[in-house]
Length: 334
Ligand code: HSE
Image (cartoon, rainbow, N blue to C red; front, side):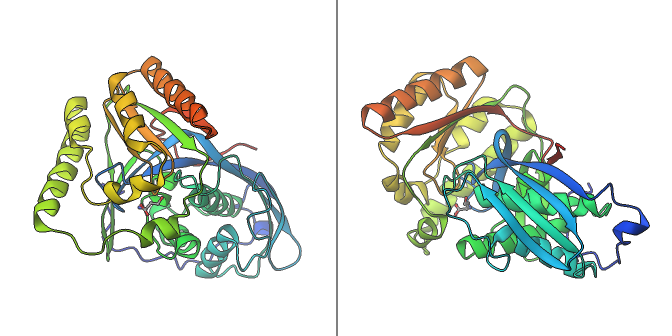
C-alpha cells in the first residue's frame, strides 16, 4: 500500500519555476481539517480527520524572494507574523529548501477558523494548509507522505515534539496509524461507514506543550498490557467494521487519568454521553476538547447539545461540532 512507507526521504528533485509552467497560477486558497489525535488509547500513534472545523491559507506568489505573512485572522493576535516563528511559514520554508526553491517569494494569509489550544490539531491544520497550498502552487505532485516530515517540523516548533498524530490525518485524511517514528511508518486505516464524531470544546486553555509535560514517563507493565490490548482491539474493530469492539477498546489507563484533571467535569461529561448512547468518549488530542463516537448523526447532536448545556450550567463557554470522518484531507477552495 502506497501509504505504508518505511523510508521517508524527502524529495530532492528540482521543481520547475512558476513561470515555466507546472503551477496553477499565482494565488491559491486551501482548507485543511481539524483532527482528533490519540483516539483515546493510541497516544501519539492514532488520529483521524474531521470535516469541520479547519483552517484556511491563502498563498500568493510575490516577486521578492522569501516568505512573508501579511495577515492572520481569527487568532486574537496570539500567533506570530514573523515568518521565522510561525509554524506555517517555517514548515513551508523547509519544504521549499528541500526542493531547491528557497528563492521563491510567497506571501501567506492565515485564516484561523478553529480555536487555538483546543486539542483539535489547530497548528496542524494551519501547517498542512500551508504546505498543501505551496506544493499545489508549484505544481509539485509530491505525495502527502513526503510532506509529512515538514509538517512534523511545525509540530515540533508548536509544542516541543514533532508528533504526527494530528498532521498525518490532516494531510492524508481518514484514520491514520503511526506505527513507528524512526523510521517513519504511517498506515491509513479503514473505518466503518456511518461512524459519527461529536466534539465539544470547553473554553479553557490547555496548551499541548504543558499537557505533555504532566504525563508520567514511566508506566507499569500491567497498564501497558491493558493499553496495547486496547490499541490492537481498536485497530481490529476498524478493520472489521465492528463498532462495539471499537467502543470497548477506547479506554486509556495511561494518559487520560492525568489529563482529565485539566478538563472541567470530564467524567460527568463521559457519563452523560454514554447515557445518550455514545459508543465511546474521551479526550481529543491533549484536550480540553472531548469527543464521542456515535452510530448516527442524531445521537451525536444530542451529545453535543447535552454537554454544551452542562458546560453552560457550570459557566464554561463551548463550541461544538458534529462530523463524519473526513477521508479527503486538505482541499483547494479558491
Ligand atoms: N499526541 C499528542 C498529545 C496530540 O497527546 O500530546 C496533541 O494534540
